[in-house]
Structures are given as structure tokens and as C-alpha cells.
Length: 416
Length: 214
Image (cartoon, rainbow over all chains, first blue to last red; front, side):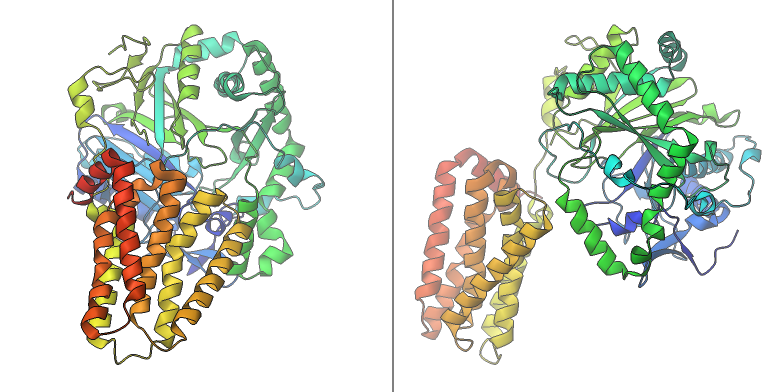
């Protein structure tokens, strides 16, 4: 699939270049742990093949007069040695302007994606293909049938399903309502800390089914309860922001951004787990109703379709949006919980890939976030944080242990 | 392994528990401690020294031949950037565009008025050099007394840098020019360095070691 000379980023993706500053980048990161040490030559070769296959990802970001666009990148593909800095900024100049930074260290491969290019789902397809190519180079016999070229892999699905007749009144104000905030001392330098827990997936599912809810709701409820116990003042409502993969509701093959978000607000006096699960479940179900998803899709496309933002010069738009963001000092959600689901790789890949971890970015408004995903029967629940304090993680994992779920913990030991 | 303190299972063989910070092995924990900002990694110090060097060379070799009207303004504006950034963070603690603009405009006006007043746009190329030192001096006072613990790695080299402030004074003496202003700046900077060392001897010593660390 070839790219036209320049492609406009999707409705949601075009927002990220607007909020790109010297200190802020909208990135997310995957860490794949291999069974053996990474071979950089194989990794580079696999990356080149993956870029060839997903040509729309072999791009660089350029800002023209009115909007940012993706331009075919003909520079040499590069990989780096990992600096150990979790979710630090992508140095575009060093990365030959590619929007995906691939780095390695020992038996780990780190993939850092700039959000303009893909969401977690699209990124996972990219990573799967690369891992299969890598495995082939190491001599493993792997079938790669499920990643054949599909139509509309780089379509702007937001535009396709956008319903302009949606009642938009009050949408922005409800999305922007203030929530309970996690507070702490921010890190001085670039990069985040993480504490991740691994558990047997079957056991986790058993416990969540006992509470009659999905795994996402169960983990989200425990996290919200923990935050409310630690930071709640009985006045502000804790709210959980869950990214929703819209492909499940609006069929599309797109690998670009096609996510919305469900903002689940809980009452400030929420105390026990059963009650939290019930409230969170009903809030999530309400957010996942078709009419609400359409509203969320409309909201995600606001910047792209508003006549003022369409024809306003890019630099001015950027200044106005940055100005607006800086005026809002309080976060609109307490925490973000993103679940990439169960990652399934072809048979034989378990001999190459040991584990897959997903890390969510944090900022001053939401300094602690939670991501989860499972691979090969292991569920990883990973807290990323931008603050020194780690009392949420400590209380969360203690609570999990009380519920009969024993995690194996690992961390990057970032302290300042 | 299992943490003896909190009982959580930990992957691998770490030196301490990621949740409760219980230290398993004292030696490995010490070896993992942060090394600190070396000279070459400290952008603030590096920029300062390079700017100092560049200004010194310009003054020494072509100082007499230049029309100083525009360079004076440029140098003053450039020296405003770090002050502006740090003051905004330290004093206001706000990430607010309005506060940025207000502080920036106040500083620009103040500096321009001061420079116009002192130099009259014509004489004293050493004013650029000393203004630069003076601005760093103001910045350091703000930094140290407002939020020492956060910013001190960036000012670790101040006592060393302050010694450089004797250079413009020496140039002025050698050329028979007015030396009151550079002398005042040099004395103030060095006095402040001594106060810093007296108030925070441990931290300053550690930082000075880091300053020369490679």
C-alpha cells in the first residue's frame, strides 16, 4: 500500500501535534520481553520489513499552514539502545523523524508510539507483525496469515461514522467536569516510573466473575476504591477514564486512531468493592450505548470539523490550544485505565516472546495511570506514575492480595 | 523472591522491594544510587560557561570595533530567558500563559530601562558581560531561597562560575575603563557563593564534586 504524497492525520490524531510542546508528547509504550537477548541486526531488518508492510506508518509529521499531515519518510530506518527512561520524549531528530521509536536492551524491545500515528490496537498489529518477522529471522517457523493487507487500514474512520446530527449540547462541559485529583511531588526530569504486577489470567478471571463483572471493571473498581480511600475528601467524585476501541462498535479495518473514551464517574462516598463494581459497571454500560458512543465520536472530531479550527492557521491554533490547556490546571479525570486485551500471537511465538507489557503516559493532571493486558495466560497490571509517591500502587496490590490475587511485582525503581 | 517486610512476590533479584522499599542488600542499593549531574550533563552550567567564553572572546578581540546598540539589546534579551523560566516556576508555580506573558513583559521592560539608563546605548561593552553575570546572580538568589532542594543540581557550579566574574573587572582595569559596576557584580557573586557554601555545605560540596564528574 503506497502513500499519497501527504496524508491528513485522522480526526483524533490531528489533535496530538497541536499539543506537542518541548516538554509534552502524547506517547504510549510497549515493552516486549523475549526469551533470549535481542539481536539488533534482526530487529532492524524486521523493522524495515514491517515499515514496508505498513507503509502508512513510515511517515514523518509535517505541519502545513492549516493542519498537520503525515508525509512519506524516506530516511534510513533506525533502532536505538534503550536509555532506561520510560515514556521519555521521542527525539524525532535522532529517530530520523519516524513517529515510532524502537529500542532494545538485553532481552527487551521497547516500542514508543507517537499517538498521531496509531492507537493501541493499531500499534499492537504493527508490533505483532514485527515480532513474527523477527522470529522468522531467528529461524522459527511461524505462519503470518492473519496480517494480510486489508482495505482501509489507513482510513479516517471517525469521518466515516461521524453523525453530524448528534445533539452536542453540554457534551464538552460534561467531559470537562472536575474530578478527584491524585496529588504528589512531580519528578524533576523526563520519564516515568512504573510498578507492574503479573498474575495468572485464569485466576483473575475467576475472581472477576465471582463479582459478576469484566476484568476491566474489576481492576478499575479496585483502583478507584484505593484512590478514593487515599485521596478522597467526600466532596469530589473519583472518575475513571477508559479508552474504548470503537472498531468493536463501528466495523473498520483502520489501524490509525479509532478510539473514544468512557468517563465513568463514581459518587464521592463510595466505600465497598461490590458497590463500586456495580456503579462502575452501570456507568461503563451507559457510556457504551450507541447514542453515547456517537456523541463521543462527535466530540473526538470537534477539532477536525469545526470551521474555525479547520481554517485557522496551524501555529495560531496551536498557541490557542496550548493556552487553553494551561489555563485548566485541574484534571478532568482521576485516572486512566487502558486495557489492550488478550494479545494472541501465532503458534510457536511463545518460544520467542516471553511477555508483553503496555505503559500508559501520565501528566500533571493525571499523574498516575493504569494499563493492563494479557499474553500467554499472564495478566499484567501496570501503574505508571509522574509523581514520587507510590502509595496507590502499594494499597492496590495489598487489596488485590486480600482478594486472593497474588501478583509478582517488578518496577523500574524510578525515585526522583 | 518474596519481600520479608510486605510479603509481596518480586520478579528477579532486585536490591530492594519496589512497593515498601525494604532493602535486601545494602551494598547493591548504594551502588545503584543516582550519580548526579556531571558537568557535561548540566545544561544550565554548560550554557553559562559557553556564553561566558563567547562573550569574553568577543569583548577581548573585537569589542572596540562593534556598534553595541543591537548586541546589547540581544544579549540582555537572551539573558532574560533562564531568569524568566525559573522565576515563573519557582515564584508562581503556575503553568499559566497569562503569568508567563506578564512576568516576561515586566522583566523585559525592567532590563531595557536599566540598560538604557546605564549604557545610554553607546558606551561600555563590558556592561553586556556584567549584565549577564548580574542576571545569573539574581536568578540564583531566587532559585536558592525559594526552592533550593529542587534546583540546586543546576546551580552546583555557581561558586566556580562566580570566579569568572573577576574577568570583566580585570579587563576594565587593564584598559583603564570604569570598573565600579563589574567590581560590584564580582564581589556580590563571590559573597553569595560563600553564603551558599556556609548555608548548605554538604549539598554544595556534593554538587561541586558532581560538577567536575565525568
